[in-house]
Image 1 (cartoon, rainbow, N blue to C red):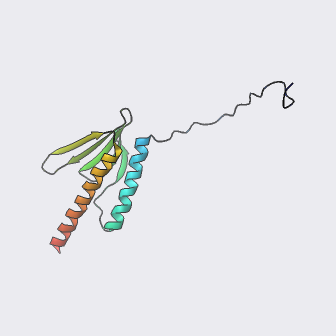
Image 2: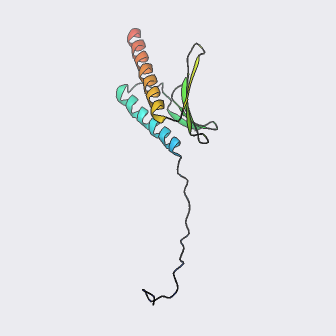
Image 3: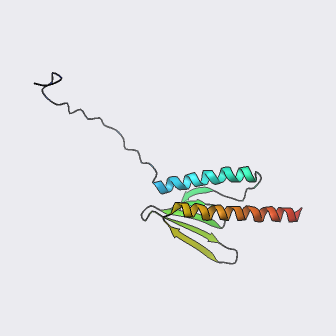
Amino acid sequence: MPLYGNSEPSLHQESGTVLQFPLRGEALLVRLAELLRRRVAELVPQFDRLLLTLSRHPLLRLSIDESAYIEFDTQSTEFDLVIEAPSGTRMIIQTTDFDAVVKFVLQYVVEKLSDETVLEAAAS
């Protein structure tokens, strides 16, 4: 005897749309860009040399400034941090450890801000 008075099970299916959510690596880069924008604005409101823009080249790229960027490869889930020095030297860090990328980027940004502050003080 059926429990609810219906002898046939209900096969009602709802149709819907599957939304594409950003991959975890992409979402992490977006959050890092937002964090850097807030921190830099708090520390040095007039500082405008950081780009902090996201684009695709064809990989997702967070451009930090004219000399540094992070790319995320969705196939390997690897982050590539690239920093180019004026002397032509290029440092590349390839890792899946996002925390390591954040530490290097924060160190780079802090040093860049320190250098700019010293240059501005010397010019005054």
